[in-house]
Length: 173
Image 1 (cartoon, rainbow, N blue to C red):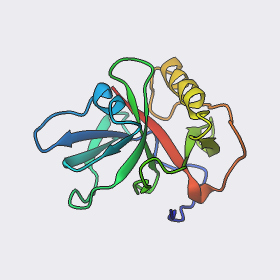
Image 2 (cartoon, helix red, strand yellow):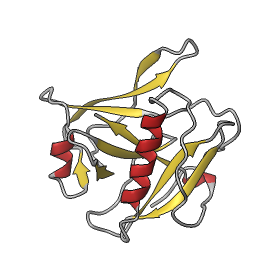
Image 3 (spheres, rainbow, N blue to C red):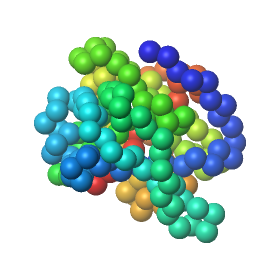
Image 4 (cartoon, helix red, strand yellow):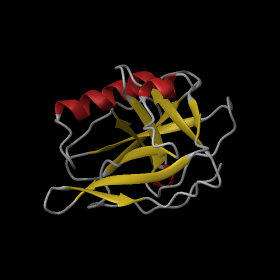
């Protein structure tokens, strides 16, 4: 599993990115759909993927995300603690996590501190420590009322890793 190098520096404009998933039937993927798919969701019918980012004026801007639906890949996902809520794992370059079903894998939970510096920690799916980390991540977002660019602090679960392996867990409800 390879990672594309990405320079991570102060003032990084990319904030929390939410993926909106639609299938070719127009059905919006729900949390219950995801939770019934044994942690890994195979995107065979993705018609369109959009990214949502804050603009300079503070408005939410929806932009197309280049995704090749003819070449389905696997996304690592974590079912949410609340009905209708799930998390999508992706990295800041927009690459998908390509892994084999049920294979050992790791996910990075990212945060933004007050100086807009990215911080990342190693989370081990095999040990299931990711559940508590994601819960704290979501609580931090809710505490800040999901304001774009707000400080989101996630307690480190293990060793820190290098910036070119930066992944972020986002939510969709």
